[in-house]
Length: 111
Image 1 (spheres, rainbow, N blue to C red):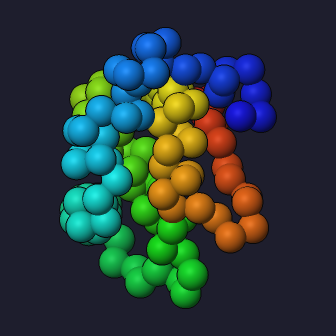
Image 2 (cartoon, rainbow, N blue to C red):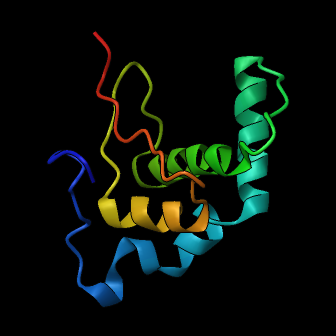
């Protein structure tokens, strides 16, 4: 992780790390779940765009991050943001890698 803020782990022992629990695979890393989440999010925002070629993994990562935040923190909104534990970020990036290794990282609240 590029910043100290992003180097936040879930602080659990390896056998109970949030990134390895069965619900992580079920709710966060399933392609079908993420496609549905992406579709619902786009409908909510009234955005109906087709992904650019090769953007599937980027969109899956974005949807997985949103799913994780909803699962762990509920609705945020209003500029309230949370840092996703680095163990979860690495698991999501491992499942949906960027071919060039380019990742955005945490974006703090905009003023």
